[in-house]
Image 1 (cartoon, helix red, strand yellow):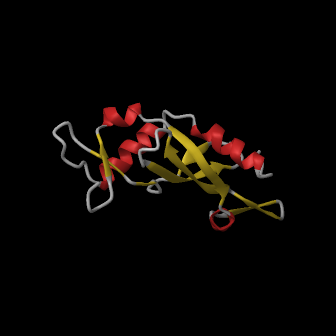
Image 2: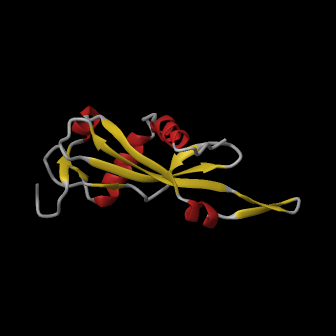
Amino acid sequence: MTIDYYLRLSREQLKQLSFRHLESHVDLEASRAAGRADQEGAWLSTEIGGYTEWADTADQGYSLGWDWYVHVPSGAMDVRPHSIRTNIMLITPEGADLGRAQTEQGLQDWLSCWNWAIQVLDALKSEGCEIR
């Protein structure tokens, strides 16, 4: 580990990792602040949001978290832009850091191929929260 606490990985090494779900929660304050729409006299939230945290299954110290949101009424769940929290730094084939912005974009692209939303929804249901 370096002084900046990042664990460095190539994109290929990232693809080999698997993660386990640690926790997910609805963020009531963020959901309230997301905006409301006046629908026939009622104020309805236009978005539900929260956060989720994950750790690598091999216990090598890789951690990953992000904020998520669900568009109402479509139900589409997605990673909130610029919300990824991690100790991973992606590197070039030569071993140079890609930098924070390119690492975040690489992780965002990787997460778009992952079926994380099902596990987040299952965790929320087990806590008594249900998003319809």
